[in-house]
Length: 341
Image (spheres, helix red, strand yellow):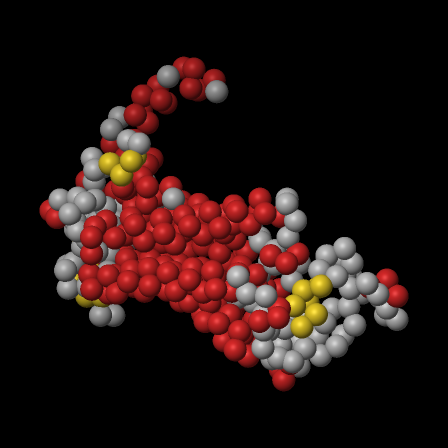
């Protein structure tokens, strides 16, 4: 075992090099996927702030009505990240889809649940339907993240019957990502009521650092519950109570300037007042916090895993020399059919 830049490296026995390569690759891909997901949330949040404050010089439909350019006071602000990125043709939609989808793919193909010791809990303990907790961790949260990024939602005021299919699938993806990840991670580290789901000896985490993972897990469930409660509050309000006012604009076709607006859909006429806007900001913030805790949990797993400290060999084997030593190369050269080929 040796030190390099403050990190203790672990030498690998020659017989376990292939396994070590796979496991170290899994840790690297988990880190890259987590950083990609984190970048998506950060960039989208920054763009959303720029859109919500005209003082930054952005002329956007958050602060100006799309059909007559009237200034909205206060500016509109979405209650969810999903609504912020619902338009694939806009910068927020493009940035969110790229970073979150790439991050989900990297996490999925890393197969870290079966490669990293600090999350691996064996394959015998079954969650349901004959599926182990380890398999559930592999095939639930990451595909949920893919669904969340690839299937956009639309504002409820503009949704039709077909749009609700996308909304339902989008929400199902969010459930897989947030709740699915919370459950499998809670089982892996013995958080709260999940402590006795599997035998303690199957958990191979470092007890000195597990409090960080438990704290992030608490952040996930608390922020998700707050988000759900706020969504219920915001869904039952009406325009007369200070919520956003969406209406069909009868004079859409008689505007003096051309606009790309679907006149058959309700458009934002008046944004919610500051009281309701604070509820929307709290809803948006709780969803962002939940996402950051999920990504932070993945980064904590990577940071404290032993696999990223594996000291792999500096050179790969020359298969020509290996074949020659085993007599395979001589056998091939003596074969007449090999010479003709």
